[in-house]
Length: 254
Image (cartoon, rainbow, N blue to C red; front, side, top):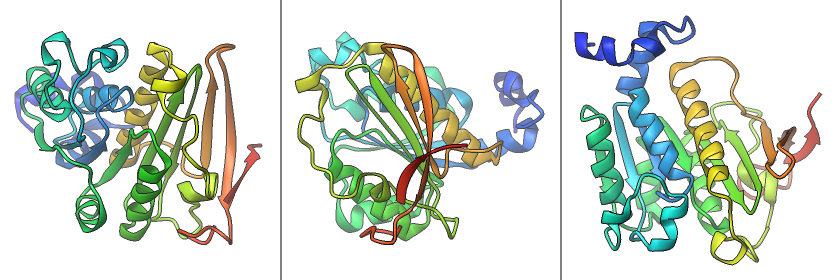
């Protein structure tokens, strides 16, 4: 670690839980961020700012005027530009030491499997169950930790799937064969700060996974009712009928 890096990350290094070793782990890590929308925006910015050394950014879409209400990694000048390019430029200005790889396409099949296999952690910021199920399955197969977030209207949730644990439930345990009816923000709306809250929690959980700090949300689902500003933490257990991992159901945490 250089003197400049020691200074840049000094406020984090002084935390006993992170220290120099934890910061070095972040610098050596590769995080795969799928979706550079409302959730992926704060995820990418905070991971870059915190010193994650390599980010692989995936999104097939371009920046639209309606995105700017909540997708804070993009600005007005980025309209019609691929989201991954807009995000990469913003990250370069924020922390030029962060190595960014961009993929302007939907990751599917073997390409998704390959990207997940070389990542230290995957952050899912997509907005449909088909993508979430595919990402979850790839992470389970590769035993790569997954931090999944969702936000719509005034409600949000975050969960961590850690297939490195033998008893770990997966995302499919939580939702089974749920469909995508009335799921996206375009049809239901979403409050701008809500995605920032959820995305920030995703970034924090990813940092904890990489640095081995504290207890993650693995095996739990954290729900936020922003209308009442109420949090609820539910335990997620394995479902023997899960088509992905053979396990899950949500129960109130003790």
